[in-house]
Length: 312
Ligand SMILES: Nc1ncnc2c1ncn2[C@@H]1O[C@H](COP(=O)(O)OP(=O)(O)O)[C@@H](O)[C@H]1O
Ligand SMILES: [Mg+2]
Image 1 (cartoon, rainbow, N blue to C red):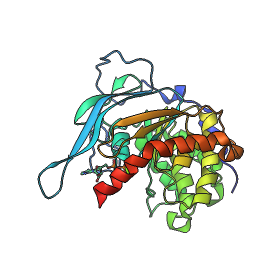
Image 2: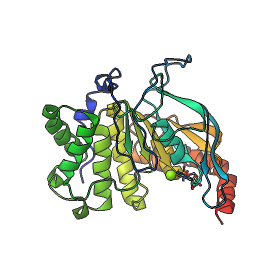
Image 3: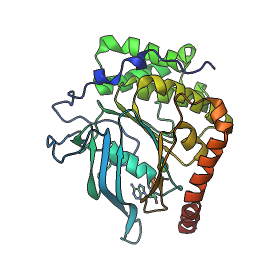
Image 4: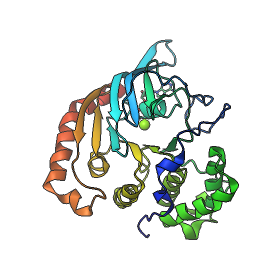
């Protein structure tokens, strides 16, 4: 499989249009339970800096099924993500990572606190500014790969005459051109995730939120896709928020890693990975890599134990 190459993604983000918030309400598909009409608060309220994403005092609790109680999933999370930064949200399974990602993307509403994307308060999905790549296979089975790509561009309101070029370039970038007319069931899990990544990037948003996009893959495929992703993203200059529970994946890809506690997720530590992009395979066997991974494990050990205790 050829390395992920870029062409289209180089048209950067300035073109993605920050002014392009549609006038009317628009619903985008999501794989999470709550869907909300797209609305952006015009309030350029609080003095957020030039961060791509600002999260202030965000807590979230859910109704607990059965006993009428509440399940706290996030606890007073404060953080900022810079433009063009690749950050990982790392924490034990079930701690609240996906919940936080869905709040950033406007798919879920926080119980308290606020999120700002490109200095605007998030009050619903922002399909022109934020793209999602989910863990599970979200390709529509009755459409070919190329048709699946079209659907996403159509939802985003990309003019018809631009769609062909974007789809062609996106598939080429991930080495999937030969499979454009295949149906999802004819592809391996790894190929489907390549398409999902291409689809997310082809939307040409400034920000891409990725929720464990390689979780269903075996470790070796995952490593190769990680290398390809690092190379691809280096050229795209996007802001990426990547959820993972893999220590190695976090170190290999990130500029900074936000480490969370067991549920309810509270920010425990921020670990910087000072290593140029694209990351080389040799980085993975370096002392520096091992030290960082060990540090993360040290931070997470007690949290993993607590998460296991919560879930038994
Ligand atoms: N819509 C929901 N309703 C009720 N509980 C939920 C909902 N979404 C997530 N949860 C619960 O919130 C906790 C955090 O979930 P999640 O954010 O998916 O964790 P992670 O992505 O870190 O594995 C889990 O205990 C999960 O069961
Ligand atoms: Mg999750």
